[in-house]
Amino acid sequence: MANFSADISMGRETELYRRVLLSDPTNAVLVLVVLASAGLESDTVLRTYSTLSSLLAASNNEVTNGYYSRIILDQTDLDPVVVDTGTHRTTLPFLLQTFTTIGAGDSWRKLIVCYDSDSTSGTDATMVPVTFHDILVDGVALVPNGGNIYVDGPTGFAIAS
Image (cartoon, rainbow, N blue to C red):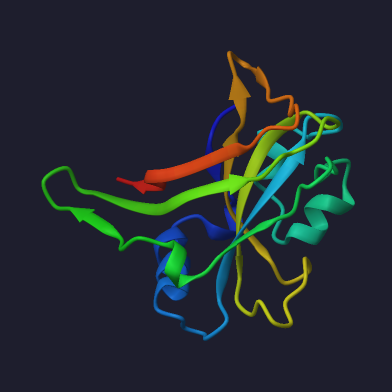
């Protein structure tokens, strides 16, 4: 398994990130969603879903650990897009995020960064998967134990080259 872009968002990662960064539309956000290891489909299948609701309607399960909730990233949580003309790479960074005191239960396997064009009325049916990221410790799914889980993206959650 690996980190990859969803087919629906492929080539649009920078556009969707900038929309949130520029508040265009006003309530656009990125949403961090965690999938459980149990029932998780292959990366080849995961990348084909065009909405979060269709992905969750299959055998994939969002984690249900105590104190887990999705993390919403608005423009204040994002750093500017970094364009390096020397290496011809574009990096999309975000600030350190914390899933606080996550209880035992589901093993965490995949982090999805989703785009929601309207956080005030958007639903899973309108939320678009952008990128998928493995959550592994020594090659196996993360098993929460009541502590904090940190997601740090200063070097970029998506890097286009």
